[in-house]
Image (cartoon, rainbow, N blue to C red; front, top):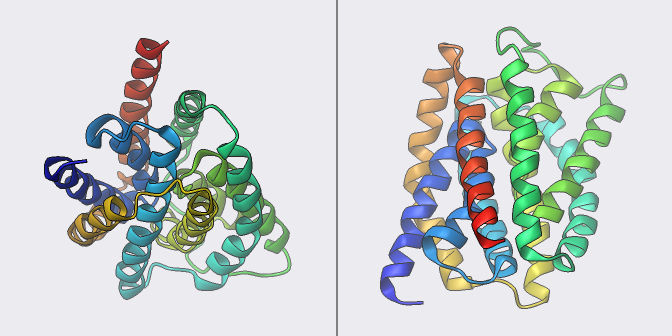
Length: 257
């Protein structure tokens, strides 16, 4: 890859960092298609492995920013991530053996389903005092394990599944689910990246410039999240982002076929 493509990688990282800060899961949704269709990574598996590492690093930056604003439920996030790491390792092992183009197609289908579910969910309300307890711990672990497996299989941070998973298991507000999801996004991404790196499927330099671009995007995205949440529009933005990227991926898959 030449300098121009690495510059595109840095710009893509800024987009991913912004969406991670904004909706928690948008970054991982965008990272793989940006790697393949904009930066020009030819192997879907290298794109998946590299984006998993970059998204994990950018999610960690976003987590730091959300922690400063007090939107992270740490006990829930850590329990969710602990259960999900097991699923992420199993899922990423299966994903490496699956055809790369089919992975991208299935990924787009899952995105559309989740987008519809998010549009049907009412953003108002939620339990602002939600915390880990005996009543919700099994649900938190179950959701974590399942979304971790999806995350690993598709080579993504999994935030677009983690956010509704956190809301479903604890009834926390959307803004808290976005911040808390980044604990699990970081853990799942690192697990997947490590598994792919073992097989030589990570471009380390590209991941580095991707993360550098994400520094600026993450700060801007976190600020925008607070503003949109107060206006009750975060779920709509989240779903809209999913539909746009999913439609593009399906279109590219159809052309490839």
